[in-house]
Image (tube, rainbow, N blue to C red; front, side, top):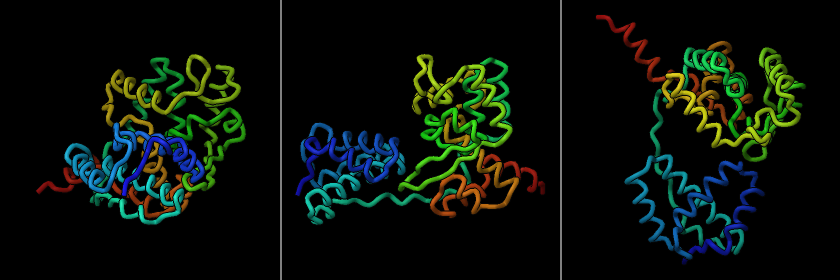
Amino acid sequence: MKLELLNYLSEYKKWLKNKNMSNNTIDCYMTRLNDIFKNKHKIDKDYLFLKKAKLEETMSPRTVNLSVNAINSYIDFYIEKFEDNVYSRLKMKCIKITRKNYLENVISYQEYLQFTQWLKENKEYKYYYLVITLGCTGMRISELVKCNVQAVKIGYFDVIGKGGKSRRIYIPKKLQEELLVYIKDNNLKQFLFTNKDGVKITERGVAHQLNELAKRCGINEKVVYPHSFRHMYAKQFISKRQDIALLADLLGHSSIETTRIYLRLTSEEQKQIVDEVVTW
């Protein structure tokens, strides 16, 4: 029993879109499948498990699981296409990941203030407004690149998330006022953030530029990435209002259990408390 890739790749991509997968997930799955298949036209169970074993030697469990999820998704497509459940035997199990009791590589509120102040002082205005938009809304980067002028004017942005679930992202009044000035000064008509050619920015481009700006600012670049500001937003929200159910809705989490991670401290915060408490 073997899986074939090349003849069905474009069909599989359409299948993922019909399942309401995000563009980011689709891109990840396609990249992982191309790596798994390499130059092979067909692969069998032995090859898949050997490949998984090799990945475990060099990659993190999360990256390995991304490959496993990609191939399992492709198998689901295969089963549906050929109406034959026999291919389910090719499915692999993900690696069990032990949950850490702390958050890792999350920008602190103090670092966030330092970074945004530096961006403003150094006239990196586009990224100043981009960062405060991420930090004050909890948007995912995939949502931010689609955010438009109209959303700022009305004060909210409706998006379709994972599984086709609708979610409303609110733009706080203070942020709205700042963004309206930015829109006027730059004569923006459609997308809120564009490149020099007037085309909407890309997720990869934002991540790269944030990394470079963090280095120039002198902040640890490991904590300056798009999703880090979503984490910071969640931690700030929960510190001011202990309503985890509301936060789960705002972030678009399907389960409150996913949101509970923001009740945890970062490793730096844990160490600070230990240093203050353990004085004997």
